[in-house]
Each structure stands twice: as structure tokens, then as C-alpha cells.
Amino acid sequence: MYPNPASQETKLVVTGLQGEVKITISDVQGRIISTINTKANNNKVEETINVSDMANGVYYVRLQNEQINRTQKLIVK
Image 1 (cartoon, rainbow, N blue to C red):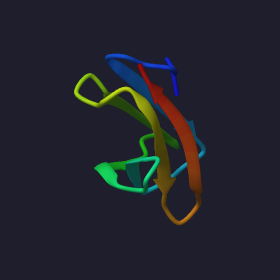
Image 2: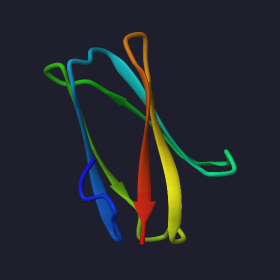
Image 3: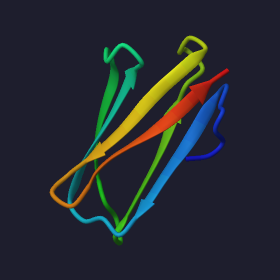
Image 4: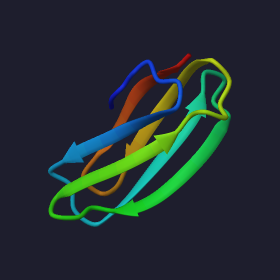
């Protein structure tokens, strides 16, 4: 994920995935901010996430499908 920290948008790129991928953004209290459903294209997921309307702070970006369940920290400033 780059840039991180982000103020306007961040780009999420994950390789080695196939099929449907669910991206969930939550705050530190566990409240879901948004959910994005996308598909891997050529074994890669590329998603631009707009963070300009999110409050400053720490968020968690979770990727889920049959192959992966990974969480990354995102800082919005």
C-alpha cells in the first residue's frame, strides 16, 4: 500500500491472487468504514482507495478470499 501515511488516496497492489477479493477498511474500534468487492486480474489486485473523506488516524485494510486473509495498517493524515 502506498503512499502510507496517505492524505488523499492510497494504492493497494497485491499479486498472486485469483478470483473474487473482499477488501474491508475498519477503524481501530473495529467499525467497518467501507467494503470493496473486486476481482483479481492476471493474478493481481490493484485498487485505489480514496481516503480524503476519512478522519485522521489509524485504519486497518483487510483482504480476504479463499487464498488470503491479510490485514495491513493504513495511516490517514
